[in-house]
Amino acid sequence: MRLSFLNIFFATIILFSCTLLVSCDKVDVTFGNLNQNTSPSITYLQNDKVTLQTMQVDSFLTSSKGTFIIGYNNDPEFGAVHAGSYTQFVLPLNPLLNVQHITFDSIVLRIKSKAAYYGDTTRPFAIRVYPLTQQIQNAVLTNNDYYSTTHFNYDAAHPLNKDPNGYIIDSPGTASFKSIRLQDGLGQTLLNAFITGNSLITSQTNFTNYFPGIYLDVDTTVIKTNTIYAFNDSLTMRLYYDQHGLTTETKYIDFNYNGFKQFYHLDYNHGSLLPAFPAPINNTSVLTSTDTHNKAYLNSTFGTLIKISFPDLVQLKALHPFIQVVSAQLVLPPTPGTFIYPYKLPPALTMYETSNTNVYLSAAISATGTSQSGNLFIDNLYGISTAYTYDITNFINAQLNPPAVISALTPNALLLSPSAIYGDQTLDRVIINDQTLTPGIQLKLYVLGI
Image (tube, rainbow, N blue to C red; front, side, top):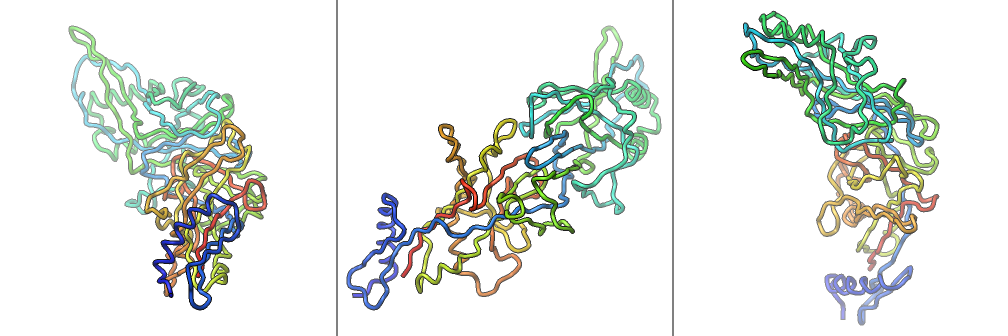
């Protein structure tokens, strides 16, 4: 009697569950009196080759994201990174034209931090606010795309801070607003312009010509900070004034930032552990793990991602005339010693399918059709089993049965990334060993062959 493949498959699934309870390399399963040599079997493979690469994106879009990244960190693995943010302000409506009995109080920059940080949060953090000396604009005025390598001139010798040492934050990671006091001269000039209807505040163009914007940086000289923080989209410049009458009432005018003229800039030096990438650097510039001390590096701040490929999959077809991967589990243990304080592991990392062009395609969905974040397990007891795990059964089977026509968008590898954009604002980092080190990346395959 000859069994259909469907019967074989369901019977094999039951037997496959049993194999999880024993340790073996190959399980041969007999299904009655099969004609010819068609006996199905399940083979467990745990040493199939996995190739790790570190991909570097030279520049990536940082404008219109509503996030201000500021700070400095000297990472023992990745090298040094220095981040600063640019923005322009929107001219508000004038509520004070010809209003009497108004006096200046103060002008502050209000900024609210978010949970994302990178580095040592125990050190003080001194923000400096510099006035721009040129407007934020591209040669094509309608183009508001600005990148991690974009920069504009600012007056580094004359910060706008009222305190010449900058605004020192002891706990910038908290979610409260920080008010950075700015020089009174700027506030007094703006207040007088509102009261008198001066031309500098009668149009956005006039206002921007007078005040092109600001550059937010961190002091790395007097205050030895070693942290990068992400601040969310709540930044405003607030002008306080007192209105005198029967009583004195303090009021304010808010200058909101221009979301189309806001971005952050990055400067970095990889140091000696992470070698230079081959020029020209673009989204196809990669270093294999053999070039990077048998490791692969992910750092969303630097724009580095981990690419994972499986060069020996085609050899599975030599095992049987027909094969089907029943389960494919990819285990990624982070390199020990690289996630101790002040560095931490990202709680969630997504696995994306990609192609030779290294573009994000779709997320690698599990065999049950669900999205995945890595199911990070932290081994607090022994510290040796910490790992991210992904079900890539669907992806592996697709590689074994490729479409008839291969295009530039046909998936052939995986990208490990916090999100589907280059250089996101999570400030995440992780380092993975290749298969030559212990613990190293591992692909666990259960293959059904007939």
